[in-house]
Length: 306
Image (tube, rainbow, N blue to C red; front, side, top):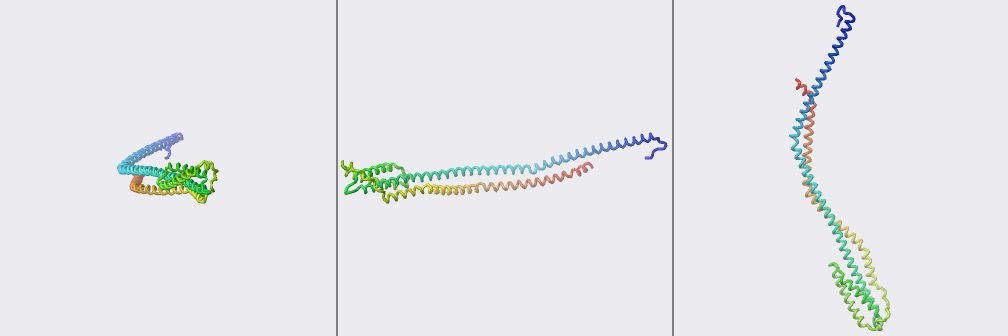
């Protein structure tokens, strides 16, 4: 702007100062107007965004809420049913395991009881055989050695008393009956011989001593020693085989029950989970569409401003 004619230096300085002040006020007002416009823009943008968010939430709840709640409820119910069946099968499995061990222990006890019965009968058979051998060895020079007769009779009586009160299982009753009959027969014979050969001289007769162990006695003793050594390993093997068979049967029953009870529920659960996944996918797509609308808020503000 050209200076007016005749303007003094002071007037020119004042005019420049006024011009600067006027420009400052103009820029300051412009900044305020721009700030106010920006605030209005942000406020309007937030209002539109809030309305869109609220509307989107309402639409989502109306569209997906009932289905989501229903599917979630069904999933929880089926999962609880599955868990209840698993717990029941586990309880039955524990009970079956306990019954397996009870059957194994029953077998072990029965076998050991039977073996003890056989041991007692074997001891009686050994006494019977030794007494017969002593009876044969006691006959010398047409007469019996009195002390050997008395010893044989005493041993047979003691063995007979022990065995006649022995309680045995059904599979050993016949063996015990035969042994007791044989033992009683020998006892009767020994009693007869002792009675018929009793006199003061023979009662003071010197004992001729026990006869050497015969082959039959030695074979019986060795055979029983071998049986005794094999008993526990064989019993352990039988118990292991029984346990293995019972466990296999229990597992087969468990698998069958699990398949019959759990498979339908697992299929139902898989279907519900698939429907839930489809619902989530649709919900995600809808949300992406909502975000796309939210990104167009500036355009909506301009439209609403016009």
